[in-house]
Image (cartoon, rainbow, N blue to C red; front, side, top):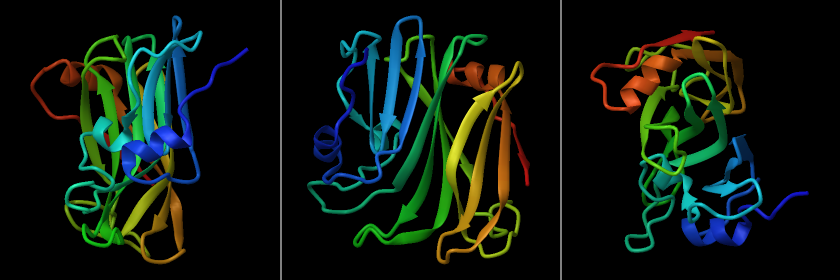
Length: 209
């Protein structure tokens, strides 16, 4: 059997308008289910009882609202959420792509990021630490100088092995339809978990392309 998850009405109310397509991220562990869609997140029991209210992905990833109802300004465009529960570290990991926009019009800007949320504890309804990886790849801010960039990492796919959290993306130009090679980002799971719990330091990421 199943249950009704986040719907377009809930997402539209949270963000000011509905976002298509409704790309989904889904992960579960020991009777708890986290669902993410474009552009909302909610945690349930495996029988469908809500453990949290719906939250916009922009708020979940500590970003300005997709559309601020007061100022009518646009915040970063997020898409393609994924989530993963790691039994080894006991943490919940989530990823999403982010593209800067022009606040007055919502048109794409010229910078992008891969955002990763890591739960501070084993409780997916609690606090999260947010990490950002610059995926613009136009040679600025220590990023590679790839063709056709500024770029963004489309459809980030999230997974892990015994040591690392790994995200792969398809790199596309923000301004044209040109595509580069796939990009791979890897970081220590235990390091991310420790930083999410308040340890001092900086996350170290390996970028392969």
